[in-house]
Image (cartoon, rainbow, N blue to C red):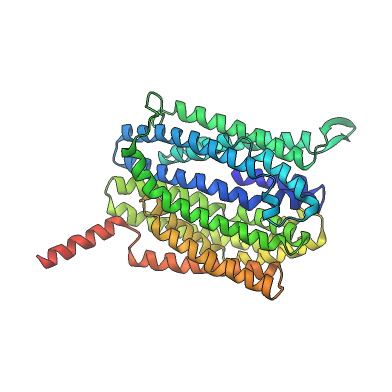
Length: 439
């Protein structure tokens, strides 16, 4: 549902032309940069609450929920001020074509006005998932998309006649898409807050909003490496997109649409990652070594099947998916080429996501941070710079570097999984055996 918001905007704005698609997509990676930091905070709370839930300590989980409310207020306010203050500069830093910089800046400003509500959606959604409630965030996601679609329909296009009926339209174009999304995000944040407040297990009602360092410290120990990882990799996405934007409008539009298309095909990975983090945290809280072992085998098997299927579908239907978002033959052809390239690597990417999710749920975020940063900056960014800036190569070479980055991260996580270093209970058992031998 979160991905669908981006799908809908890209598809409905795409009918206005390549310039509109480029204006909407040119700042997408900055969206990842800000959103990923909030998601990292969510991982910290998810890990803490999942372990508390596994241990049967509901009161500890509710205290954590009140601290998540405090974090939402602080982070949401900070990112609102930051995003709005820098909105005019972001398109310049992203090397967006001067002809669409003003339009991109306006889209970005409007989209980030409800940042407090978006923060609530991300952090409170993580809390609900940490106690096994994944349906409430899904239902809210459906509502957000309905509001966004209706808003886009009324605000993007001018008044027109459909089937003999005159339909109102504000004719606001890209700005209309931004307003519709901003309203949808605000509705989502309000609904997520109400849902958390009324939740029978994790509601923060009656809890103090004063900083509780007995909760915040362990959350920060998990969240900080994850935040650094997400910030570093998202900053890499910004640099990556900036180099692609400098290639030209066709490359920017093809990259934007292809990114949007691909995001739907790795959704199975991230959906299972949430399950992996929650269930691994529960098992660790219960000190159930066998459950962690069984869980890892089941999740990796399911994930491999899902990602092979999604990769095959992406490869087969790449041109058709591109046509949903663009009418430009050059954009469609170039986007389909890079999508078919990345489709082959989807299963490897999915396996990495699952192992990372289990590690997040058990509070081990340092190794994923090191893996993510080394792959992003050592392979993707450096490789793309060499290919596009030094050798004058195009979008295909940049996506080849992205695939190499994903394969490197898969190899690192595979070694970590095989060694058992991802599992605290395995390490604890191993230490116990060593002590026994020395005795």
